[in-house]
Image 1 (cartoon, one colour):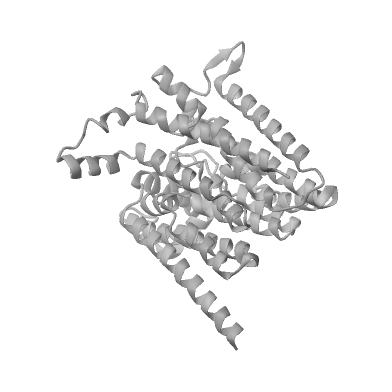
Image 2 (cartoon, rainbow, N blue to C red):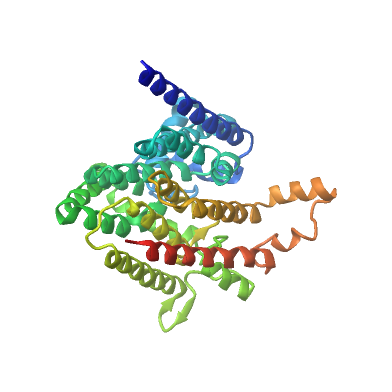
Length: 423
C-alpha cells in the first residue's frame, strides 16, 4: 500500500508540474506572442496546407513561401480548419489554437524529462520535470514569443529518451519525424549516428537508419502520389531565400563578424575565389564537428553510456556557433538536450544555468518591444541610452558583442570540459 501511495503521489505531482508549466506558457502565448511570426508565418503555412492542399505547400503562389518541413504546416492547417483562425479577422482563434499546441508540446517535454530521470528516483524525475517547466528560456520562447521550437524539441527529447533506453530503431524513427518538423534537427544526424554506432554497433546503426528514412520516404511517396514531389526541392530554396544573412541575431561567430563590420553579411557574398560566405561557414562547421566527433569516439572507445545525450547537446551548441543563418533562439535544442543529460545524472547543472542566461539574454537583446517596455517603465522614456545601441543589427553594441563572445567562449569551454571528462 505505501508503494502505491508513493506512486500515486509522484504521478499527481508530475501532472501538477506539467499543468503549471504548460498552462503558464499557454496564457503567455495567448496574451502576447510574436504577432508577425504568428500572422505572417505560421498562419500562412497553415492556410497553404488547408486551402491549397497538404501536398501543394511548396508550390509557389502569391503568399509567403513555406520554409518549414511539412509536418508543422499540416498540423496547424488541420488545427486551424477544426478550430478556426484561418480566415481574415480570425487571428485570435488561430493564436489560441497555436498557443495550446505549442504548450502541449512543452508539457510533453516535461513528462519525457521525468521519464528519462525516473531510474534515478522519483525526486530526481520531478526535479527534471520542473527544470523545464519553469525554465526562463523556454517560458520566454514558447510563452512570451510563442515560437515554433517546442514541437521540434519534443521530438528530440523523445529521441534522447529512446536512445537512453537503447531502443535505437525508435530513436531513428523519432529523429526522422523531428527532421520533418523543423530544420534545426538536421545537423544532429551525425551526432546521433556516432552515439548509436559506439553503443550499438553497425547492426543497430542500420536499424536506426531505416527508422529515420521511413517517415522521410513516406512523406516523399505521398508527395509523389500527389504529383508534387519535385516541389520538395523548393523547401531548400525558400530556406536560403528567407535566411539570406550569415547570422540572423544568433550570437555566434558570424554575429561577431557582422558586428565588427557594422552591417549584415549576406550568404551569397563571395569571400574567396568562387566561395561564398555561407560555404565558408559550412566548411568550418564541418571541420569543427568532425574534430569534436572524432575526439569523442577516440576517448570513449569501448564505453557505453548516456554521455551520448550530452555529446548531442554539445554538438548542437557547436552547430549554433558555427553554422550560418542562426537566430537568437536556435540554441534551444542544446538547452533541451542538456536538460536530458542532467536527467540522466550528467553534471550539466552549470551548463543549464549559463546556457539559459545566454539564450534569454540573446532573445531579449533583439526583442525591442520588451526593451522599450522596460525602458519606459524604468525611465519614462521609450528609448533609454542603454537600449538604443541595440535597436538594429547594424549598430555595433558593446552589450551584444559581449553576449556573442561569452556564447562562443562558453560553447568551446563546454566542449573541452566534456571531452576531458570523457572516460
